[in-house]
Image (cartoon, rainbow, N blue to C red):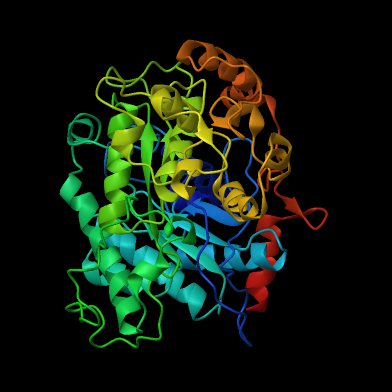
Length: 487
């Protein structure tokens, strides 16, 4: 049913719009460092905000809500599409501000994640989001973390003004190919999705250059030792050192940070027929071309009866989502490329084992690796050896030969690494270097964890929204009324 917004209480709206936001996973927070200030409420830490997630995916540490679940568009995969008969609600900017401050003062949240359906038009929706965040930063003097969605099709000046108030922005591309967009979201075009992403990237770059920073130094330290990463080509070379980006900072105080925690995006996994190779190739291009901090993957939960979508009873591909996140980590920190991890002949991962093991089994000619002489880049490609343990190995072997017992103390995961390394020319056990044998062993080792990932409903996590009562018998609605009377 479509409920008239004026008949809903604030708690009713919170029920509807917190639930409507749970399918957007792109809400981590890191990279923004802002100290507390006298007369302001809250701060933001560069170390990031730790999250607790509800059993249905909602985030606790950030108040994760939609400004509205009304939408003029009819994306076939979306629960809030215009054709669906659902309760609809829209917050006013003042209502969101009051909720954020009240929840923050009770130590329930550390910041805000704000997205929205498209109400009336992209311009109208982005204007409401900007008003909300502007009020939070000025009238309510909220200094905490804010992540906002940029609405594709909104005016550039609104996106720019919002970027100077928030910590992170994101533009969800949702579907990774033009064909998928045409089929499932025909009103969307890749150009409209990429335009705000490019604008945010240029704004971030322009601010870094304006304050005298080298944009390349913003890259994660874990990749600086690898010469052939996906970040090898500097995406800022065309700008030139200190070059002003037209229209961005000409009349702006350069001390005001622009999206200091960077931008992110989200892709839905399983709603359309792309292979893992296609998804990972798009992910790699997004990192290279738009300087994204994160690409998030969201396993599609069948919500709508539609011939173009998976059957309503299809289980969400959670294990596939997990493998893509692991592969994303390999792209960003381990020097891999999408074309190395997968190929046209084998375009999908074996979801029963992690992507690094999958790659190693496809390239057994490169193993076993001798721990005593392997380079840092070679060590990083060994399953069971991570960035920290690879550095420990490089450091420790300067002082003598290493044994498997030494590696265990360095936190190398020997149950995976044992198939791919030697110490002093010897393997831990007499193991045949043969793909089928090692695959069976690794699959057996991973079976328990794979089952847990595929069956999250058997586990229960703390949720802010399971019980709306706070301070004994006081509800959110009551506390908001009390707070409003004090303003």
